[in-house]
Image (cartoon, one colour):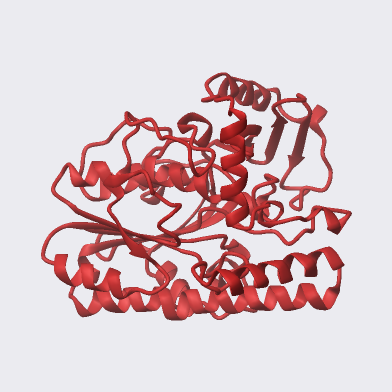
Length: 396
């Protein structure tokens, strides 16, 4: 069984038809969900790319693997999906938004180019289609400033600044224009990018032998959590600064013709559950991680929500830790000890924080997880490097 993992950066669940989005045309992704397994409530391990993607490929929570900025070092004892599949004879390749960032110090990911075009990925598929393979694709079409390639630095930075200034202006027309650009980027992602990969798999006779996992690393916000819109300074304030559901809830769809029945799983799951699931689908040995295979939920052998833990970071440091156990979410501000808590079934927009009413169990979980967190104090030089890298990506 072959495996394709496709990550659409900063994709909100409410902008896909299969998740209830009404004003977007996402037929290809919707059909993928209709013929496979759609998880209604999947929770990312972190609200931005570096830690959340590392959790996706390791099955380890962000506060445990400690990869909280682009120049962090991943503990070599933490096994990635790339190493696990390669050890069992799989050909492995990755195509990412920018080779200077994602998996730059992870040779086992075998980064062969960017995902700004798919010529390289298709060439690799054609060369390896007779062997079992793992192909990982991370595309930035849905990442702010939306559908402008990061390699086009001048236009990318100008478009990014236009988006930020639109939010800061608190202008309804600027916000509508930005959201329309996002909708168009989502539609192109579905109907051009994802569709072309599925068509290539079909043309090579691989579709029936391939697990296709579609997900996002995190969602997106547009300054709605800031009363003073001038406080929105960069991408960090759109995803990264908060742990509200619009940023940490992500789409997750699994398609494996002949292997997975069509079903919608309503239970809460986590992005760290992906690696154990793919290993089980491929018939490979399980390995230790924070995640668990999703297959028991798919076949009905398990019911109920899985507790999700989410790490918030700032400049490479762990600043928030949240536990989401429906119907509650508890957020701990690590340094101050301040808490936020939201009863999601009656307050789905998380507007009324009631930490005194949160079940004590959530507090026990969050403090237990904090004790197990990987903590690393950055030097001044490391902080300067982190700031430069984040600035290059428009986060600052």
